[in-house]
Image 1: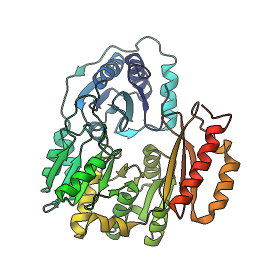
Image 2: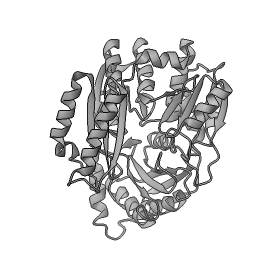
Image 3: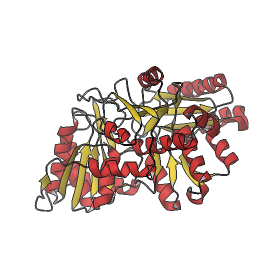
Image 4: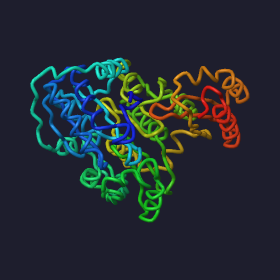
Length: 438
């Protein structure tokens, strides 16, 4: 297995095994040079097995480990930043329960750059005997108290009284925290899908499947719905009408609010190439500069750090406030969004409509024989021809998945019909290409 766009990920116990987790723990300890680690995970049935193996690898290399139990990814990053420890999260985020993954944070809670991941992979391929006396492994701790206070700090002392909010915890890592976090804001809160049983994480719920949340929002006549993913590092919102508000709209709302208050560093926001063209047009109209990166929140984080910027994110709902956190945080972003709703006195649907107009976008995932990082070069002439037909009114992106043997074909166009037909045509080219076909 190799690192993808967000750690390593695969089918638990077949692709991602306990033996692999043990070796990854040992290699990460050697490359990162940490003497202290904080480790948490989500609610999957395979998480305790993989956590035990990974933690054993760390300990065997002399790294003292504090186990945090079922904990959101951003809470682990928060603890790593607070203590100066390296961090690790056993989670496959939005994937089904039978998958799992391991995400790593450098000491201080930042994601690893490509070159460090490559060094860990190389170290795993050449492991020798343990290089140290084993270190202590401490029983399950609780990072929630300091973390909840940290989350509420985004409100700067304001409250959300009068708002009615539905929160979908995706039966994931934040299931035990969402009631406390949102109730402490003063909002009326309805929590759904917060009873994990090891196999129901992301199953028909959460950020990847918000239909249930949409129904509850309208039934409860709530102002806003919030859907987290399995490890709670991102969110999708639902407005008072039951319509989905995606990461592009959330980021646009937050960027324009921060800019209006003089709180957006260099009046700049960082996004990925998947961000809708409508976002670019909205930021241009608002006088906000846009910096674009490759797909993956860690590339957004790298651009934020190199430019010293304060806000960035992805269409998928990873939103990063660098003055508040070292990584994306679904609950923190939710509170920031609800704060804008409360201060503005406006409905979320109005805020989203005014923030940006989304161009029709179609995404087709095409299975391929193996991941091909060079797929855009391989199909350069076909992509160029399709782009010429769209002209300046559309956009095409063809790229490999960072975690699966898929090619993602994304097309934006003035009409949904044109976007769909263009995407279908390119997807068929991918399916039948001799170097890509399964």
